[in-house]
Image (cartoon, rainbow, N blue to C red; front, side):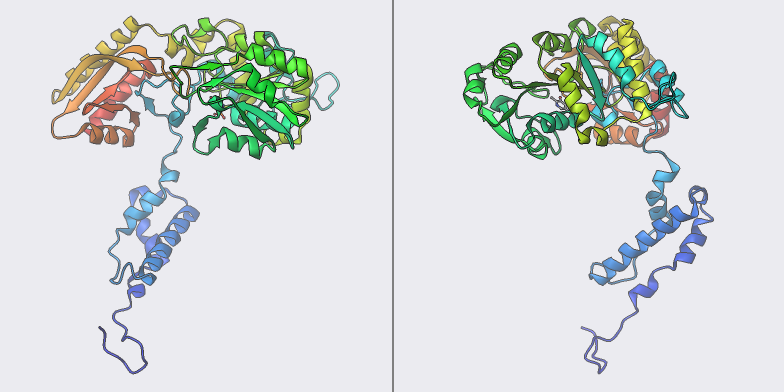
Length: 469
Ligand SMILES: *Cc1c(COP(=O)(O)O)cnc(C)c1O
């Protein structure tokens, strides 16, 4: 207890607020720090104020009574990291997960990157050369998607989540939308089908059961208020055992007979089986097109192998209705992505996907090639780091992003261990290194899968390991 000073309050000890540095002092100290000297003043000022504010709050809330012992320069360096190193700097993906959502899904190849760079300045995004009049920005992708997919019309929006919400809203706003109970997926985070349907303005009507839904379940659920039927690809899980679901063909037939639009959310968007034969059970766009739903929706950055987008393809009147929805404008693609999607589609049309789209190349690379790269990487690591235990092991890679979740792609990985450092710690250091290397940890070993490495990545792995060991 502090002595009473006659005012009814505790006698002031040394005022802890006074022990906080002044902003000017902090900035002056930052001026003599090599890393902080390069940080622009507004960034430093903002960081310094934020740090001091949280210190003052901690003192006020009684979490800190004594003058805070804070390494302010370290705190400033951490708070201004975003300036000194881009969070989107390239990283090495050694996880073997080809479409790693955390690492940006489909890696883009040189042709697509060049197309994106080419659109960066002025480009004829929405203008007709002949007349000089305002044109439509999705005209080119439409001309590419229609022959590629064999559909009447097509367009694209920001991602497949947007495409789904837009389709729901276009056909079932204020109406009922029928989905099988076996298809009410959560893709990740807050993206859950029932929430998407309600935010899209529709009332969800669930039919069937988790494991079995038949065509008559859909038929019985049709009412005056039915806006659409949606079939959703259960991308990231698979129900086994006693299961049955109505085929897309049956649903399309029902929809036609009763005048109800059918939407197929295909998720990953593998165009044809031969683009990735290893993904045996992954549904393909070609089969969906053959079944003939009104709309087909899939992502641009999953098995299509391009930048983030949501492809919307199907019948002329259905796609036209989507385009007329005011939400379409809120979800439209910018010129950079549009350029990337266009080039991705051209590559598919040329039949060059497995060569020019790295995601598809990586899914198809042969086991013997993977073995060669693993052997080479292991040889170099043994040579450079005698203290490291290095070995090659057979294991599996994944397509990722909910694509073909139960398909295991055979691979050979390099496994490394270092006595005195846990695998988790070694992997953490690699992630925080420069360049950052993302690897898998399993059995207290760090696994480097060559499937997701590009040739220059071998040097980067060596360089990164040299820095962290
Ligand atoms: C991935 C996926 C989505 C979301 O697609 P994004 O392009 O990531 O927005 C929606 N539906 C299905 C079935 C998916 O697999």
